[in-house]
Length: 450
Image (cartoon, rainbow, N blue to C red; front, side, top):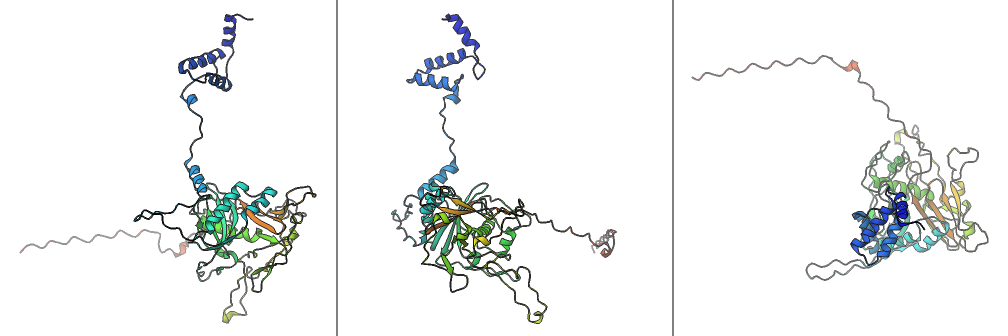
């Protein structure tokens, strides 16, 4: 057994993690206990020894609490309000709550069951967030001012500063869309790319904002650029070629492109309607087993194809009466797109250049279990052209969702800069000499007083 002097000398020679010795560390601990005389001195001793702290200052004595983020707290509070009854406004004259308006009657998909299908495939935003989405869908659909007929959760777009939760709706009173100016491709009011009205919010429980209708020129311009969203609808889209409009217009154009390419339904669920461009549900459809839902032949495109014109329905100009023989249609007017409810097997493979002989398919399979003997399986497909777009199906229930950055997985070919302006023709210049300075007029002589 070493003596007292030898033990103290040994403790003084052993360094701690902060440069001092273990002897100094124990001295400070004992001094703190004697100074503060805490009721749980043993706990303080154990904590100090485990954390290896040798200096007791204000920072160490302060509790370790998370930093209070005001923005996160506001988002959490707004989401929590979705689960309770809304606060009724108070009448300033009587001081009594104003009676709430009758909730709007609407239709929507089973969001929670869709969450279970997506969760079985390991895609989507997760069940917890989808539960909040279901409450947000209820709040949006029951709003008596918006008069929503149907609502569907389209997906989630990531942004640099904030995200977008997108909801696809149809209104009982469709808003009027103005006509396109002369010389531009006509808009599609209530059909094609404008068949649905989209609402977005930066966080669940936040304020819903209705996106503007999409123009063909917006879609054509969005195809020539690649841009990450910021999360601010009023931000300018600074790109080349220039995009006319704010981020709200760009987001709306990307939604139209993604929807026409990736929103699908099982084969046989819908049939072409009597009117052109309409679909009718097949009541005799028996459903699609999950084991068969991971093949491209089991799915068809639900939304019409987006043409090069930026429209779903091909538009052809009428030739002038005097120039009917010499009139020629443009390349866009000659496009022949796929028919309605086209199979995914006909989709063009990706032009990634990895293997020209065996190009990458535009779709990849998804299964809930690799064991084929598992019952009640869920199957689906994921898009490689628009990463984040997936679909899931089990028997008669199916769903589509997009969760991504809104960027297409295609080679980006920057547009060439505009041609350099020519120099001014010097031959048209009258003279290179500066004109002579005009001679000031002589001062008028003052008339002498008579």
